[in-house]
Image (cartoon, rainbow, N blue to C red; front, side, top):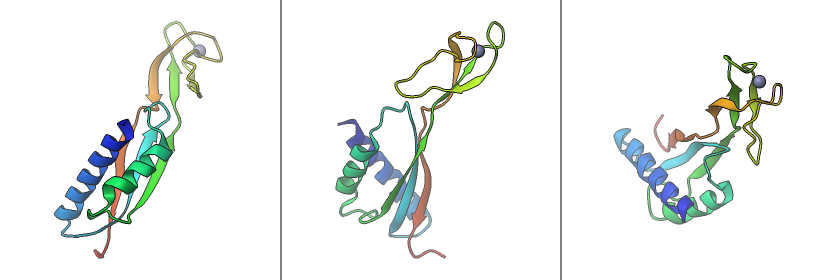
Length: 120
Ligand SMILES: [Zn+2]
């Protein structure tokens, strides 16, 4: 299960941050997850609850920021417009109907914030 290993690495990184800050409890974490990262938020929440149990993140709040996928049309041959890829992803420019040359956002999978408890 993909989400379980992601949850495990999130818990590990957040515990690491807490340790460095001298805190023994994490109140919450914020994750940025791109639309195309292949992560199911509900499955991740569930996994997070399991993995966090008994760690510094036990009972921590998990905030998931979903990042919409955006791609850019080519400037050499296309119109250069940036557009929302949507779901299921369509990598064709809606303006000039050429294939996108670059994915701007949507593959994020990052720990954006760790909020530790008891540190002012
Ligand atoms: Zn275009």
